[in-house]
Amino acid sequence: MMCAPAEPRPLAQHASHHPATLGPVSLYVHVPFCVLKCAYCDFHSQPFCDVSPEEPEHFAWAVGEAARHWAALGVLDDVLSLYVGGGTPTTLGDGLTGSIADLCAIANMRPGAEITVETNPDTSSPELAARLHASGVTRFSVGVQSFDGADLRVLGRCHDAQAAERAVRELVATGARVALDLMCGVPGQSLASWQATLERAVATGAGHVSVYPLTVEEATPLAHHVATGALPEPDPDAAAEMMERADEVLADAGLARYEIASYAREGEQCVHNLGYWTGRPYIGLGPSASSMVPVAAFRAAAASESWADPSVVGVGRVIVDVPADAARVRFTHAADTVAFIRTATGAPEEVEYLTAEEALREDVVLGLRLAEGVAADLAERAGVVDALLRLEQQALVERAGGRWRLTRRGWLLGNEVFAEVW
Image (cartoon, rainbow, N blue to C red; front, side, top):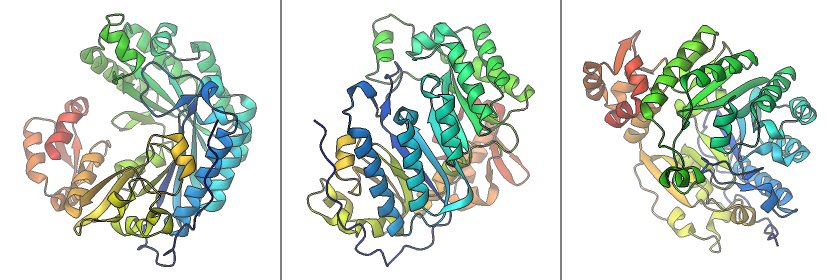
């Protein structure tokens, strides 16, 4: 039996003492429900068949409580983007429309704010998509992964290639912006089949494509299949060749690479994801969701009654001993849906503090993911110019127009660049 939500506690005892103006903020909601757990997925989610009938409603209530908590602290005074991910949010059906409406009423959404909903072909009915778009959703992100049936079976996806193509076209027909995700380096995937997937992706009319090399995560069915020899280990060289092919095909189709894994037509770059790469504060609601805010906003939240309640597990680690030199704080909620419903406004499970110097260095590392790179003065303030000069000698980065950016070789060896800069 699903535990009922806890009674709401006072949200912000010190809400009148708002932190300094944050500027624009991004809001993320993690919906922990899906149709079926994919073979490669290690995100916190559970199949809808294992969910009690009342749990989605209780989850929606908890998300609203958490949003009101941050709104009371002034953190949601200027929300530039809302991204609802998962899991598969569209498993909630029309309940998702209501939740988005509630969030838009609680947060101060900037006019024209980007509102993205993740979906899958098997949960993207034209009727639901139309209702979501009519309610304010401006963008859909579709988990296609491949237009090849063999690849989809290896990945444990619920849809076939025809259903994926049909779903993307139906979403494009709503008038919303549409993005789709593709995965390369799948065991058994050929360069020819990858080429065909890219061409079918372009033909759907989607204005944004993200391309990810398959990673074998621990404790997933895919990891078991690889460990037992049922599937070969993904080949990183083959994945790199496929990434290069994607770069060529998508560029020829008018989708320019603006981030390591992301391509878009002009004006269709993902505003929400750009916030992650440029140091914009963000608030994550839901189990396993992460947030990143300046330390003043974190202290204000830690002073609220819901975090000070001794019944909240782990609160001592959060309230006490915030380092004096902390400038930025990243924190994550427990990957536990029932715990989130019970204590939606409670303290996070994990907290990481960054000094001002570390925050600047992080901004450089993340900014280098972007095709335009980072401003030279940011690199100077972060104290990483010597590292960049060493990388320049290895032809991994270059200087252009007062900015540092990855070379094509650096794009393929990004992790080496980021480790050196950090």
